[in-house]
Image (cartoon, rainbow, N blue to C red; front, side, top):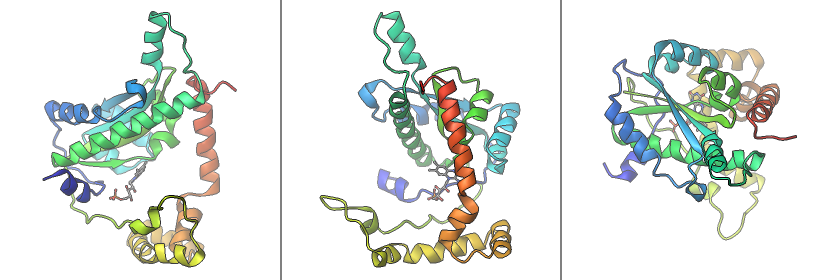
Length: 258
Ligand SMILES: Cc1cc2nc3c(=O)[nH]c(=O)nc-3n(C[C@H](O)[C@H](O)[C@H](O)COP(=O)(O)O)c2cc1C
């Protein structure tokens, strides 16, 4: 398969066979991952590959009890990490300017680029991945389980293993709704309706096929996909809680001075 085939065949995998992923494949995937560009080639990230049953059981709880965390042989957590770099600076009598929020953003971008490059490499080898937003939303718990020291923050993570399902690729919004030519075009209401026309239907159908969500939709009188997103999935209270968690954790990990 060429790289375009791999990219276009992507779909998140949430059911896995129990077979382990051989270490040489893990190394191949991560060696590809670290070919990603990084700010100043500083590579301000660390990758934690968790295989042990007891640790994955603890991660399962931190990752909001998503069954795939128990099922997949590996959980791979990509962390923003200025700790290694800052130690190197200290050893070389170089000033340390990396104890601030901007440093965290730089490192987080590096970590995300590595994760997605590794994800594509994994899929090229026939493996499956599914990201977990709880890596950041529950950064404090994930950080404690993985024993992350100051200067290190989990940003994105995915489960990795051999697929035990073969779902169809999910839809995407049309390119015309995502790309702007020369400068930003602020969409009119009609354009927004057109951009989301197919999604409104496919997304609604998808969620109606998930019994737990269907029940919630019926109980709460939710009427459309947009309402599913912000009345059920991504509530104001949830976001406020996660914002607090992340800000407090960034402060604890030395990325937020005030
Ligand atoms: C940062 C991030 C966090 C995600 N978190 C979760 C998650 O916690 N659980 C889950 O089942 N899928 C999660 N996903 C997967 C998305 O739901 C999925 O990528 C999206 O629905 C598109 O489907 P596809 O990946 O199959 O194309 C996450 C994806 C990303 C990029």
